[in-house]
Image (cartoon, rainbow, N blue to C red; front, side, top):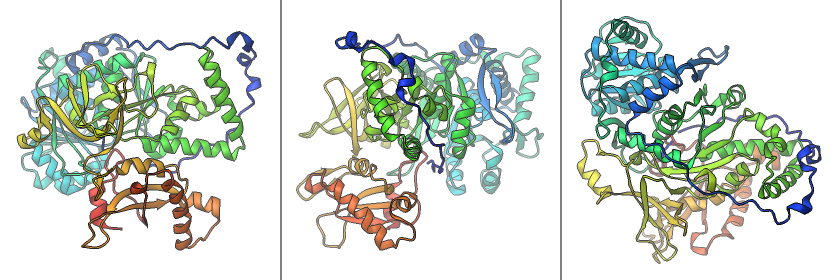
Length: 615
């Protein structure tokens, strides 16, 4: 699940004023009778679902949970979150699907580009395509005009559905897209004028046709193997490719997760990651729909904390950068409140009690929970490796911390840590519909991750040669480097395309070093790479490009520090990290970066872009 571009805001939490553990009644127990009473976990997987298509899930859930809330969204920033039921969602999806086919004459396999921020009508548009005759093309809302134009042309799109915030960029490219029949703006009631129309108009026209007795949309039969979704990868290392996904790929994701994680209709997912990415659109949308859960749509990154507190979700999909920032900000508030020692003591005591079947973490750490809405029980991190100490802290305060692994090409789930055996630091074990192996492992057991799965893409769009390069006898060659333990749990160490090879043939994976550097408070972000200092240099110099955390540096060392002083402060910390590394991996050169790193929509640094730019 690589490649998600979020710029994390500087959100804050109030000081933590936690009371002593002696105030929790459940702690006053007889420890003598518990010394040998360690509770063993039942590591048995759950009975998985057996869905074949997303339409099957759509029909079932909108029938069973018709009157239950499905979406929560704040349409007016000054208002409250509004509730949208499964029943209304079905009516809107069927209305849109019917309107597109019956009123606006979209035929089989015509492409629907959907672009915009996370909002209710994005979900409606995507589902109408999955359940209808068309192919959905979810597009990154951050694409510049020229790249958006290129994606629309490459996909041969017939209709572009866009949010009001994307109106200006659509107008820029509209005249260069003669093949597009309609440009439909979400939440608009505009009648058809030229090629422009309001999406509400299409939905309402479709509803009139349905009310007149036309049920043709729901009668459309979905072939599980049929090309249904086209997703262009953001390509951290190469030009984006179009990934062709079928209904089976998506349905098998739901079946796979259901075997490892138990979800309920009372669960509420918090949607903050971009929906054009398969991680959010599949696990953050299709999965909760399958179990009757609700989805709270975050207004945007700067609203994460207030939206968490207002909607009180139980589950949140995240990427490491987001989880790490929550961890840092909460712990900073704990330190400012002078409660760090108390919290650490509470963690040790509650961990000990949990081993004997007494779990009081939610009571003990209730103040931390309240800052996150009060009900959070799952955080799932994917898209990149995360510092194990961050995941452990999440578990230590009583939230189930899961990690997932996959790519757009695996739609996206290939591995996941089961909730009944959540091993922090691992990217999980192969899901029930997949096999994973390490190809040509080295002396440390590290090699490229190869995946064979029912979630594997149909292939790259109009690029059979590229497909053949990465799929061999049904095995997808991921490009990721990892090792696997005896229980089949996967540990990602790097990307094969990022590897630095020394003159002695040693492989250095930048991601491994970056994780260690992430523990340095004075570093906000960093990128490790091999630099050729002179043209005739045969050996690359291990270099780190760093964005300093100026706020933390000012807090620890004072204001108005010179650039040289900041460099020295960071270099001293890097030298401490070097002591933990074998000599050939040690960082030899530091570069201070003034501006932000360019990133993909999964917060992954675009290394090839950064290296072209220089320091």
